[in-house]
Length: 181
Image (cartoon, rainbow, N blue to C red):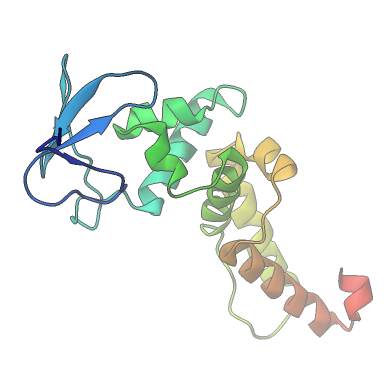
């Protein structure tokens, strides 16, 4: 006997109409329309992102994760808390980041991306002071980032840009690559 309802297997928006989904923690079923999920006990509006396309952006995830880290520290941070704050299930977060470590690396890279980088000219001392003061300000705003940075070193684009800038400044002093690293 065939079921006239469609079964959805994709994390993407379902086709127009309704389809049945199964929650992995049990046998609850509900119906997913284009804009919401209805379950037996509640209706959850689909999250929207800053792009306005109804999808959760990675920038939104890392921003909320940073807020939770600021409020509760690394020990209080869980993927479940993040998902709840975003209004989604944890699997939506895992569709963007393979695990908690990957997410924390992205959060570190986001925080490092707010460090002011000096213009690449002239003296070496002033640019290093700019980086140092800016990094200090970032860590004062987000003190929970210190243990995260130590536990989850990253090679994200912002971290690499900061490292490349510092490397270039120290090379201007006359240090060779071995001494700089």
